[in-house]
Length: 108
Image 1 (cartoon, helix red, strand yellow):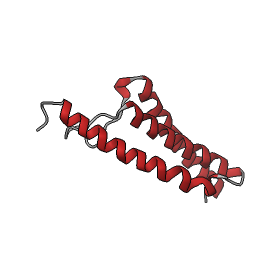
Image 2 (cartoon, helix red, strand yellow):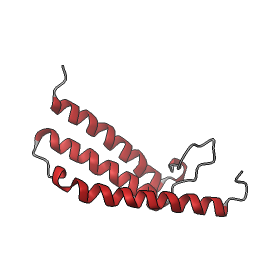
Image 3 (cartoon, helix red, strand yellow):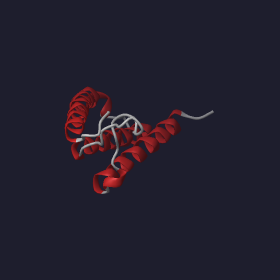
């Protein structure tokens, strides 16, 4: 039987790992993510989108680590952090897709 502390640590490792992977895409363009499926011509993430994704995953991973052993401040701050980040990600996804279709002449 796995304890709740171990579950929070395990989830924090996964979330922080995704955040670090997305943070690498900021510095190395070959690791930059894409919106949608790669085979379907998904638009590449802009630098701002890549930064928002990495920031979101790293914050959630860190809060997961902290909540395993300490009372977490993140429970109270969640709506103030998550909803603006989510809205910014949706706006950036729309903007990246729009710019990709406008700049790419080979879109089917």
